[in-house]
Length: 232
Image (cartoon, rainbow, N blue to C red; front, side, top):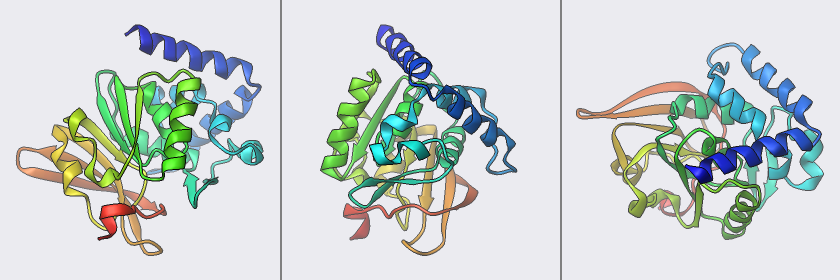
């Protein structure tokens, strides 16, 4: 609990000293003005977006565009999702303070940082080693102590930390990976883009019930493909 309070305080301090508070507030205001299903209205999610310094999660050359609602390159052929997508996926996950969350696709660490302010612990898996190591160091240096990062194939999840209350996937497989469903608690939520690379992809929200998975289509999206075992 003390670590969580410390992380919140550190994030708040960054938000007040990095000179980007106004840009962050404009971003949040814009997200609330979008039409459905893109509108973000969950105040806990919006407050988390206000706290996290997105410019610290993008390459220095991209920092001036950090609060534009657009994806940005982060190297190794990967991107950081647009703030609107991060917000919409987080809202769809319905995070609770007691939740244990699995994230597949750490990327820059931004989505994990947002989630860390909303849940008990985030377990994040990144298949690109250089990105995983950078993200882990970045999250640690910024004070997000309730995030664990592992370099590996997210298709298999993180069995030792399961079961999870929620799973969020930031890359697109063509089908939902069975191991992620198996590691989800009954009643848990899975937010995942599904579809072929370069083809039609949809963001889905799945809920695990005693009768199987119940799914809801959220919006059309465009994500980098899930690599590793997902492509075999």
